[in-house]
Image (cartoon, rainbow, N blue to C red; front, side, top):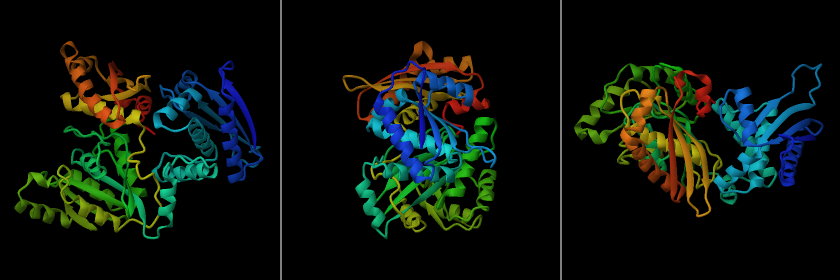
Length: 456
């Protein structure tokens, strides 16, 4: 493969090691995908320059780790030898390698592979495409003998185990029925944020539960509801799109709520799936035992469920039975993720979600739906503590005042509560630097939604 390197800006000093890793990865991909005669340009840049490119070409106002621009045409009369250009921020790659706790070689190789796959036509917008692309990335990393899986031996052992099962389970339901609480209880730690405000979850969050006989990958989705703005539209699309590419579905309902239009709306969408659907009647801890059976009777004829299981996600009631039932519908397969991995979300994104959770819990009226959080900086300092600078975005100046509170009291409380959870996650002392800014009507602005990592 013909590989052309460039720097942006031209006077940027780049370690030769980084170029060598990029070259090795691209050449290996050329061999694996029959592209030995193709050309690719690889530009090494920094966060400032890739931030500009993101803003110019993708309407995303933040730096990312890698960008890809495919040149290949499908027209037979056009020279298809030029695959395109990959742009990698070495500054971002180094920070992520440190944040994730692995080598720079592994991070650069992964980013190069990710970019190359985009040039070859792979994508991760739809769930099925994302799963396929991730499988290709693991294939490439293994071919390079640079696995991102620190438990490769364990994974290989399970590959050989004919009885081991693995699969994907979507968790759907109306807002505020306890989906995130359920995920956190199954995984055993806080990954999905929880709040008494509806529409808390905005992204599909991949959470992984690994047991001796199976690995279940849960997709925690935004609650399905009638959208009122672009953010709402994205949330519903994310939830409904998940149903196409999973092995089973958890449909969570609130035992204390009456069956209504929202449940009917979801059931209508389930009709087009051919996946087993387990109805989980949650919050039974709020009912008398004699009141549970009438709720089951109310639901059992609304759809042909593979199982109906009353649960209390909060109190871990019947969750063992739930997992045993779910495993019946998983195909035999390998361990897709390391056994100690519980989510595919980077620490900085989880930190942002934990901050948003506290802001949701402590604010009122329309402010919760107008809150977004972005971690601008997250780094480990010399003494081993972690510095995090994050911005809480709202849509109105009046909301900014509410979030800050009188003499900054509410913002301090948000910071104190967030810091405790983040310290548990990272296992270190955290210094949290919070700011509040106004981004007017951001929920109706496509670029703003994407800049918060919400729009794909």
